[in-house]
Image 1 (cartoon, protein in one colour):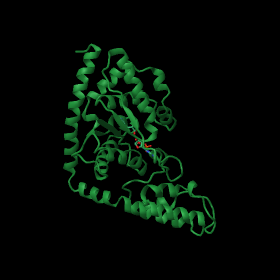
Image 2: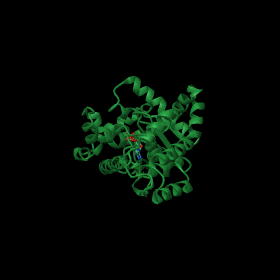
Image 3: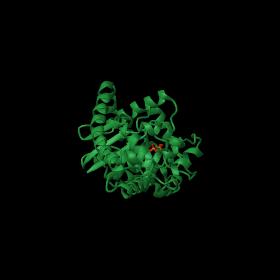
Image 4: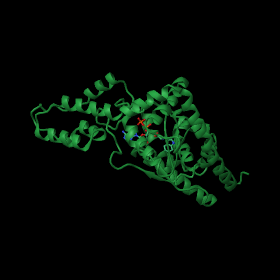
Length: 320
Ligand code: ADP
Ligand code: TRP
């Protein structure tokens, strides 16, 4: 079973990325043949500075490894090290109905937020389909916001197979039910674009400050509070033990504890949760060559698989 997912190097990774995509992907690496990659071609649609892009790629590589991606189990590589994927994107674009792309939220969202309305941004889901289909992927672990893209991928693959025969494997999204949408500090979905993130590897002081700035209502300390309406509890649930969560919920219901105290508990659980990853990251940073070697090796494995698919795909289209 081929498991595949990608993450864009468009900024520092945050807790939403971790619980929505990275942690599920890391857990799945024991259950099949996992391919995980850094989607740098995709990031060119929104990151226009070459220096920023290459710094982001490095950071994502180190962060993902520090979080538990195990290169002895999963193949880890940079998207652009397998250029065949852009060829497949073109071939797929010849069967992709315009209407399918016109319905995609991400183009509308990103242009509304000021990104240039380029063909690349519009055709983004076709490149994503190529990423998935070129490795004959069965399962794609992603956060909920990527669900539409996986549906588009399935539609494109079916169109292609309809025209050329059973050439492409039809993939399935795997979306974690429990924390499909991690809230940000302002209660909206946590996202780089909303500037409401908690970074996985943020600086201690800055992170504490961010947590203390979480927006709450003005319920007085002694008054009972509704734990189901609290962003603090939602985030705490991700990083604290069951017993700690139960205590925080009770303290909400009983009153007598203020939001400041809840935020302190959240910070300390958060800091503890990512402690082993921080340690691992510090170790990885002492040997930068190691990370490059992992992704280079990963790319050569991934490329082999991509080339085999392309041979099949080209033949099916009449391009020998
Ligand atoms: P961002 O919204 O910060 O730009 P990306 O779009 O780069 O994040 O998302 C990378 C991966 O992380 C995707 O699989 C996405 O679904 C997941 N993800 C991002 N934010 C969240 C969130 N708040 N909750 C759950 N998953 C998320
Ligand atoms: N679009 C995805 C995101 O923003 C990243 C991505 C690119 C991806 N290609 C992919 C995810 C293929 C899964 C499979 O998060």
